[in-house]
Length: 384
Ligand SMILES: NC(=O)c1ccc[n+]([C@@H]2O[C@H](COP(=O)([O-])OP(=O)(O)OC[C@H]3O[C@@H](n4cnc5c(N)ncnc54)[C@H](O)[C@@H]3O)[C@@H](O)[C@H]2O)c1
Ligand SMILES: [Zn+2]
Image (cartoon, rainbow, N blue to C red):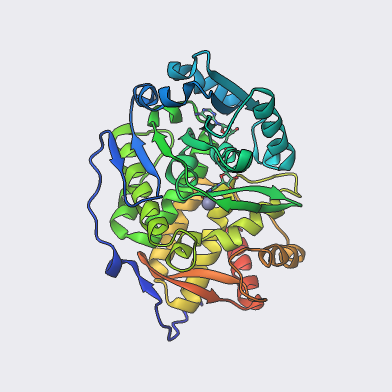
């Protein structure tokens, strides 16, 4: 029996707060309020960079890449090939999102003569954005940085909102800070060289934005196929997704209340992601969040009355795109222990954002250990 309606009190209904139109899929500057990112959608990032860079050139420009974005993305940005532009290359992947790499970046900046007025550009996915943003924010007490996200996940999520972090002692994003980039430049052309697995991982954050915000966006994105992308539509959906994220981070930059909606799927997702690093099949961020969404939909259903029909539809879409991730009953305690390190927790209680329907969420929901066990079992059962 999955549906056990209970009385509950919704904390926020987003529909009451937010009612906006879609963006025009053209070059667009979103300036929502002071100190919140400017996000530019462009098919010509060079043109924009040529406007931004000159004021920094005498103090040098530093571009953080990994081996993949150096090969596939940097050549598309001739504006970054001038004498004052310095490339810093790190190794790709979550396993390098740590203090060793941060120190490497700082040493490079120091050796190459960076000062506080230099410009730092993150050209890459969420790992480059999170870690490069942190490196820039702390170097000489902070240099300006621009994000040029090159994965779907970074375009719709990681590059907006100012959360910067590295992993520490096996815990995701354990050490970090909030600081916004000066600008974010989004160009969907970069996504054309992205691995399908990475593309689908980013799609999960679009699912999250849709289910916490509105059923129209969900209906638009649920037919996504990574093998048959219509780029105009994709751009439109990315813009809509960014707009949803911007809404939450603008209302609540420090994640004191409404921004917690963005954590849907992430309480269990982050723990599964960290847990997967100790297995022979480490998951990508979005892959782990997809499992988190399934488990937290289950919790939403049993605790907050999320409709069974919608839950099954969302799970069906998720299952079309992902392989099953195996974990045993004996691993539950380890996964819950990882959840207890989550920054959203209060005292000893594990904090969730749950849904009561698509577009309606309740923050600060607490689940018992046995409810969390059930949700982990639910994922196993539906994937038998
Ligand atoms: N700050 C936030 O708000 C936030 C939100 C969500 C996720 N994140 C973080 O983002 C990270 C995951 O980001 P990700 O999914 O972008 O992974 P990633 O940064 O590891 O990039 C994925 C892979 O794609 C390669 N790549 C990047 N762009 C490419 C391109 N255009 N063509 C070919 N290859 C390319 C990279 O080299 C890497 O191998 C996690 O660390 C997660 O914690 C942060
Ligand atoms: Zn995420």
